[in-house]
Image 1 (cartoon, helix red, strand yellow):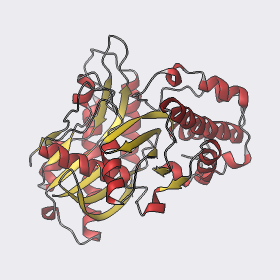
Image 2 (tube, one colour):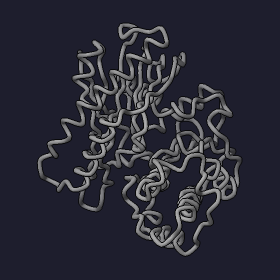
Image 3 (cartoon, one colour):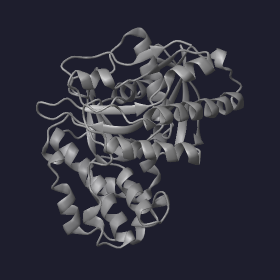
Image 4 (spheres, helix red, strand yellow):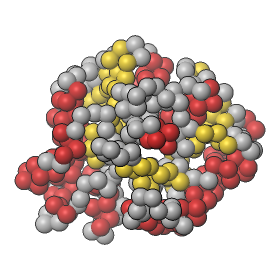
Length: 368
């Protein structure tokens, strides 16, 4: 199957796109990949939907803005793909399937006696009608309903990508988006995964709150700041870090309040240290030292993050590009791959990746 995968991260930066030729098990070819920056109106409505989601009581009807945001997101996906396909000499009719993750506006991990809650917005029916191609979507709901974390879902793709590159276990893949998550491949089909802690999300929110831009571009603020050990220790005292994996996070699960007394640069440096130390604690909890750590996602563009990881971890830390991977497109590729697995009824989440009781299929397909 030739599948177009879409991903929009919690940074609300862009629509990422990638084409794979895959049967949901092996990858036969890597098609083009690219991105289009989100328009300001779409970004604004997604921010408003996220704010509404944070105030959404359990059991209450979903906020009215969800439907508006879902349509806006789908329109943005369609427009982005129209440009992307044309630029790469492709037509909608060249595709067999689309995988659309949607925009995450809420993610609550399960608690004792309470299932989790997750919401990804994107009008799959609208996109299927406009594109004339079936759309796989809603990849997390079934996992959450079964008591799983609903995240991370990319690990099965990390395994396929590593195999396609001829890599050997044991190795680990770290994706640094709004939240950071790690996949451990021990051998065979054995994968384990969880969210280690914050990724770029807290840094983005802190920089935005101080009117200093949308993100710490190139780590320019963190590079001249100093991590505050007392604040760092307080952040690491969060009970999440004592919880056993598998486990998942929302980028709003940690408060920025402890950072308020710090200057911008020191706050940025502290958050870089927080992210890297959380990864180290994750490795410590797993008791595994893979031969290398492959880093993908936007966080690898921040040199301070990469330095902090290498300083704290005992194995080589490499960017995705060191193995010929497209580090900005791994998540979009993953949802193309998961769409193919959905179409074939193959599992996309597993006991050691999301905590579900057995390997589970997931996702739903909307026909044009």
